[in-house]
Length: 530
Image 1 (tube, rainbow, N blue to C red):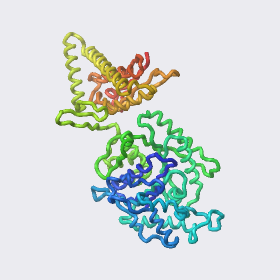
Image 2 (cartoon, rainbow, N blue to C red):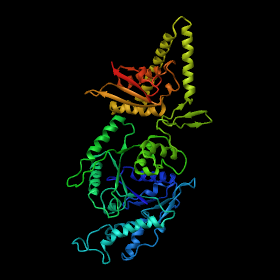
Image 3 (cartoon, helix red, strand yellow):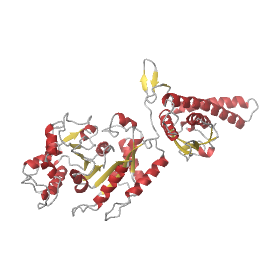
């Protein structure tokens, strides 16, 4: 049974939710799992499985298991750990693994908190010699037995539960506590460190990581693997800034701490971006069955899990192959760019409402929309050629017309989001305006937008580029067709006029367009202030 501890120096990193998603992931891979809530001071793992938990109420858990040993005078291990364990419904195929669940205990009971506050309970996590001058101990208490109690507890989980767990996932309390030491020093084969982008998170994780590296393990135990996840990063942070942040974090982690005897070095960390949906209501992106919602965070979960449990990918070695295996098994698209937007259908009124802006929308297949655009262009070219103009000149005139139409559309849209959606944009920096527009238009527009911009000392944009992935205006187009990206060139220029309050010039050359460069995965639209 492999043991993975989920640890964070501070709370609010998404630690418990990440554990719950990994449990579901392992179950869908056919592995039996035991999840253990060892966060006694702030237990909450049972809330993550609220729709799958068989029991309506948690009656007992890990704290009660430990208390049974205390009540025996520290002499007898509890006979069955199964009576403190429930099962989480994984549902669906018989191939799915079972999820055993050991909660912290019944937090609705006053008895739970009284036991938690008792000296006897806290003594269980102290390993000082008997002849210590520290505070007096219980008459029957033997600190040298504590380590064996917790080793036996883990062994009971491995041997008594049926079916036997392949993995034990432990939710540790944040910070540095006696109980956390069991989770991070004694039990794990792998520790996942989750931390937010704040100085205290960086400092705490580095301290714990380097300190544990200097702590000797038992003779039969292997060194603990460490995996790191930087969490709660804004979803609209551009890739370049995100990469620089990762480099800065790695440099800080690798600096070491004063007095540390080992030189540690990380080469990479995983990133989990924030998710607006989870701010309103938490949910499991990896569920018992069915395809996964194709947004960014599930893809980042899969990337993280591929680093934690790479051996579950059927012997695959290369990370790209491992990721592809996990995505296929869990029903996740290959790329988060392939986003399907769910509209609310009102049959009586015969309309569809976009959940992003709550406005009435028209739904067309990409092929229908592009075909309609293309047929109009072809008809205009034919009529223009009939007047004696060459076909190339006619196509050029069409592209100019498309650009002008896009400019008007972009200006109207830009005015709407600045005045109505942002209420004038007061308090937003120019970078925040660009990021918000890209995020908004990625939800309702022509593809997935991002930006790279240069800002002068006065806070004004000088130049940059807008990057458009999954650009459906170029879908199925060849180099001999009219370039529908002319419309997008004008559209972006119109939006940027409203965002910046200045005149800008946008260019889009064939070398920057996927219609002409099939190996490219994006269209680049360059702009400069004029």
